[in-house]
Length: 275
Image (cartoon, rainbow, N blue to C red; front, side, top):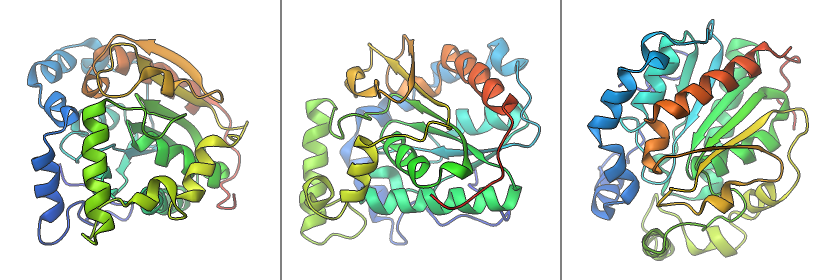
């Protein structure tokens, strides 16, 4: 799938020019990546009525997709293709596999949100998976007038590192490498220093009341502690799914159809890029 920006031209590549980020993501062997390769789940989705006869019409409305830790455009194909099938206009936020600085990723999401809202003249639904939900929540806090609604899937929202110990260890390795100066990776300051202070503040602070916010979570999530998905500002919807399965599980897509229909039926206020 070629990731296109709102002008129809190629978006900036998610990998670095020399392919180093691709090698890092592959070397980590993240459980998320392994789960996302389960072709059987995708086949089950494509045979389900929510795919073959989608119960919602997007009529060209914009949706911003935000991936998580170790995520790639390929991993998000099920969401991207389904959003096309329902007639919406999905755009992928370039977040460099979600293994870089959280504040930089948030800025990238916010900038893409600005361009998409400006190009379409209407607020955008943000759909985010895993760590991408952190970037998406922060972007919504910063640009509430540009957001029609926010839907997160298995996102650790109340604690940034509410993940499996193996993932924590891998994040620590990334942070150590980034602190040593390897470009494109998160650093220790992202968690505790000034680097991502604003992101951390956006996650712990109030959420704009006028923006519908839904957090989909699973108690069977083997990557993210589901308790951390229970953001006080969100409406919580539980499903039975693995972490990676949250973007291939037909039950999730049924929920998405219902939530998108509700968000798109709301009267949208004029787009404003001011926070």
